[in-house]
Amino acid sequence: MTTELRVGTLRGDVPGQEALVAAHRFNRHTFWCGQSGSGKTYALGVVLEQLLLHTRLPLLILDPNADFVRLGETRDDVEPDVAASWEQLDVRVLRPAAEGDDRLAVRFVDLDVRSKAAVLRLDPLLDAEEYNVLLHLEEVFGTNDQRQLAAFLHDSPEPGHRTLLRRLENLGVLDWDLWAWGGRSVEDVIDERPRATVLDLGGFKNPAEPHVAALAVLDHLWATRHERRPVLIVIDEAHNLCSPTPVTPVEVALTERIVQIAAEGRKYGLWLLLSTQRPSKIHPNALSQCDNLGLMKMSSPRDLADLADHFGYAPADLLAHAARFRQGEALFAGGFVPDASLVQVGSRLTHEGGSDVHVPL
Ligand SMILES: Nc1ncnc2c1ncn2[C@@H]1O[C@H](COP(=O)(O)OP(=O)(O)O)[C@@H](O)[C@H]1O
Ligand SMILES: [Mg+2]
Image (cartoon, rainbow, N blue to C red):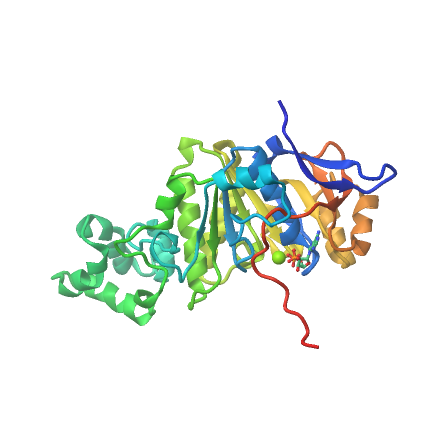
């Protein structure tokens, strides 16, 4: 049985004809593209709402601009039965500054060793001694209260532990708000399989913190991939996390992880939806794995040519329309639609989080 998601109306000869997207084809990766302000996030919200209503697929949303923090709240004008179904949905929103269970936090000691090394800018060969101390940290520290990590390293008779502590202190890593220490970590939340988990990645002080938060969850999903529990990993403004030219060790690790999920995640149920402004801002090895395309307004001929190169299934004559799209107009192509088509995206059911800043008049 196929479930069709109602995402808007088709532009064409028959007015009001419904635009349908096949829910089961989100078992492929999806690329979502359009220049800034073209309505990517709005349209993404429309599709995610339909997935929440009509499938049981869990969503993990990496949200750099707090655009989805109100995904759990329906608008006043939605049908009462939709509002009632929404009440039943388990939507979690984790935010940096929140209290208790809603806080977005990660346990340092539980990070994958390569990710810990990336945070500490340690190379396995160039910094062999220190890397080795890190490699064995988990086994010597054991199940101690993670809040005691600094004290443990400080009091340890092993000189390597004090070197590691100095590195943590010098890089300011111990001061990050991201750390859960002994508390609940985002991986624990994901393991409970909520229908939607929104990670608000804005609002951290250190620019590496949102990257490490994303890395922690993606590492965890990868480490548990053999459980084959499907999840749609939605990354808005994905160029922040999967650039073709990552710079810091954390950015490199994150990009590698996303590229790996793009290449090999599909058979484990790890499906990506990457949204960004230009195709050239995403690592080509992730881009080339996307079988579905949602395109909003795009004026740049160069970007359109790039898209035509990568997405042979998007007809050139339809791509050409994208330069003149108005807000809410989109081209859908690839496996999730029967035919590539131009669509007027429907209305949101839930509130948008972040909103445009207006010119003071
Ligand atoms: N289909 C639509 N219907 C109504 N408003 C829309 C629609 N698409 C976008 N908007 C509005 O336009 C603005 C920019 O849209 P947004 O989705 O944030 O763009 P992008 O993510 O591409 O930068 C937002 O204020 C949003 O509410
Ligand atoms: Mg946006």
